[in-house]
Length: 396
Image (cartoon, rainbow, N blue to C red; front, side):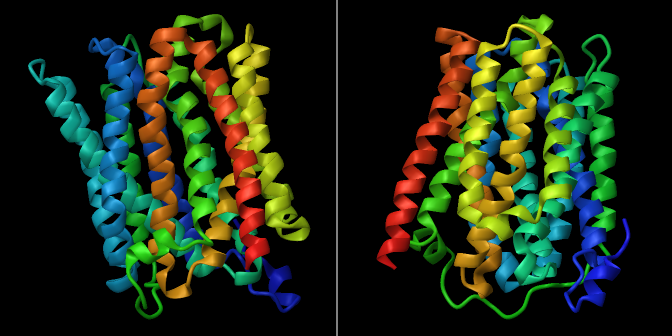
């Protein structure tokens, strides 16, 4: 990656500063460690968990992450970003080691798995919140959506890498190598964050929960949570669906296509949202994600699965950075850490609600109906958001 000389020449601040590049690589390593756990439901199924139990255990991690967000956000805004980078990094390094310990102790029960999920959830809450906050601090304000989109590439590529990583290292149902490799990724991410500068400027002027209740942010919390529920359908249950219907393809096939679609969109068209308007681009992005879920529901071959991955990748490719940019724009500058922590908490809330709900749906109605339900949910939520946000803008 090279610094943007053109931006400097034109009098614009460069996106690719040294600190931004370092944060980008650190996020890539941490995200690779996290996203490889799309294979984790297979480990649970191997240990005797059904769809509902898998959904519940996924929700445990989401609950831990949600409960940690107020603390994470407040610490970032009062004590600084560096402290949370170190604490979150250490928790992430510990998580795969604990999975490995549980895997190698035959008598370890579900309580031990729940404990590991809590630690993993705390790590996720810290790292995703703080790294995105640092990135937002570093990018120029007039190119915020583009900067967040490009930084998000460091989290999208690992979706492909993580899916393929599991395909490569999980041999004959042995997940120990997966835990060791993800632990190495977490350690590399921690070491890369150590040279990052402190980017906090000033302290918060109001409480963490003031951002939660701010009227201008409520529609964004809603659409973020419901979009995340849609994501939960394939992040949690695609693995077990493909084990049941192997003719559709593999996790690596889906997530590599998904990630490539999102990355190409962000790299070559990252300027589109700020050129044509954030909300105008957000709506078709959400609907593309819903279309991808619908295609998963209707899939009968690997071609359909690839098409679904393209649509889901396009939807996620723009929706996440656009909603992030809207949150940062509408929040007060001195509560940026709390606002981003809340935004990422909405994604955890979506997983919390979607994991058990779609687990029950899969158990009762089957996987195609479950993905169809997720597609309908995202479509309806998009319509509600459009009406809600337009009324809010009109009133203000």
